[in-house]
Image (cartoon, rainbow, N blue to C red; front, side, top):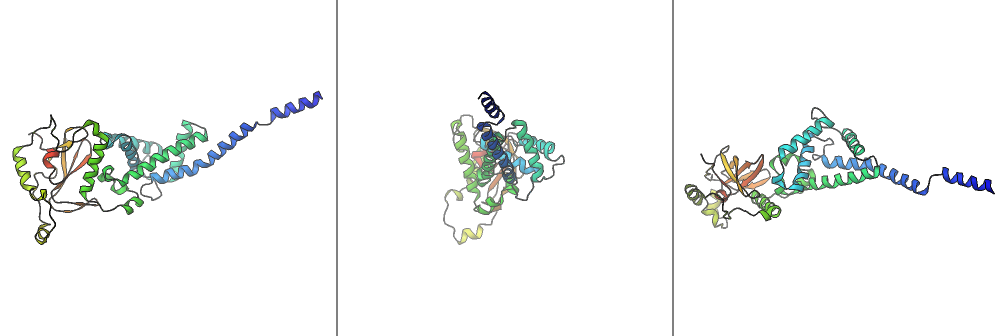
Length: 303
């Protein structure tokens, strides 16, 4: 009887417990999910859908992640570019050339293993990365989150479904985004702020004459259609230094005019009305100034 009892005890000790077996099965199941999750993450980063990951794609998608986390004007695009250019060239390709999935997979597996060798934890990390990449990719749908340099990287499925908006839609989206994310800080075009510099009287007079017809929009008639292509005089020229009113920072910012549109046209997929200006300030922030907004949003720097 004693020998039989000893034999049973030995068997129990050598056989793996049920919990250990279940744990091993879970880890094997998690391991089998890592490869398809990496493929999905690569697909989301491949904004052009051409089967390779480009350096600029890595920069752009992480720029959108940062914008969604911190707001458009809070993101330093130059720093973001430096960071992800360095990652791409140190970890993926030293010359910045596009890389296939295998290179991306090998790098990501190193990152995952260094963070946590447990396959279940790696699956959780990949699922989080994928959700962030999905949100970043989806950000290209919204004009208020898209800049001029994003155009070549707008995912095909988004580009195909995008309606043809007007530039007024884009400006309205920019303003709505600023008000929603910075409402507590106050300040918007047209609001009288204590530290807002007074408008130059000569400029105000000039602008009021230019915008007389735009203050009372009417249905187009034959006379209006015949003059629609006529150039609108603008007080600023391309390349000219200006100061731009920043809603989020509630102050004037030094900038310059990127482009002027004296005639109605189409630019960057938008219908641009005559009299529009495109300006930049604060390390690459771009703002479109619509007709009638000039004296509210910018002024010439003192000379």
